[in-house]
Amino acid sequence: MTRAGLKPSTPPEPAAGGAIVVFDGVCVLCSGWVGFLLRHDHARQFRFAAMQGEAGRRLLDAHGLDPDDPMSFLLLDASGARTDSDAIIAVLARLGGAWRGACLLRVVPRRLRDSLYRRLARNRYRWFGRRDACHLPSATERDRFL
Image 1 (tube, rainbow, N blue to C red):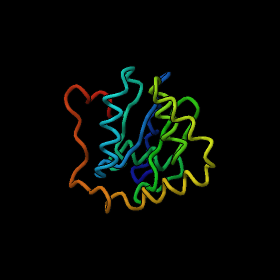
Image 2 (image 1 turned 90 degrees about the horizontal axis):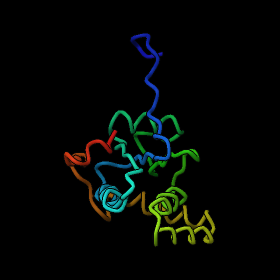
Image 3 (image 1 turned 180 degrees about the horizontal axis):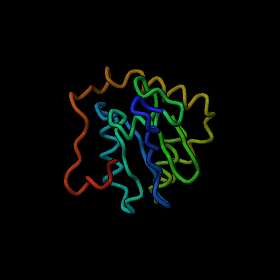
Image 4 (image 1 turned 45 degrees about the horizontal axis):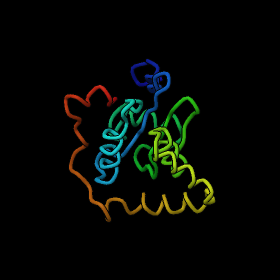
């Protein structure tokens, strides 16, 4: 129960056949990743939530990730929740076409893939920069953001 005596709102769920990507909205690399997905997701299957926003925080918390210190982005779809390298591979595979080749990365042991991913995540601000505010979607993209 919240202080007002109401139950906290339920985190959003992906639409049928769709997926939600929770990302760091102030990270230049992460915002670039979202831009890449917006350009290549011709089926419009992905929706996005910045971890700094209410929906993103609720989703991270509901899946055991600290909204104040996340070291991964979160992918939610009909298969469940995925993080780290498994999430990246799943996102790329969902884009179809040549991007499905990312599935070949699964031959690399997950421990190694995730170790590399976490190193990138820990250093993302230092290596790529940080914005003062979250990515603001254009008018044509607004319906894709929670």
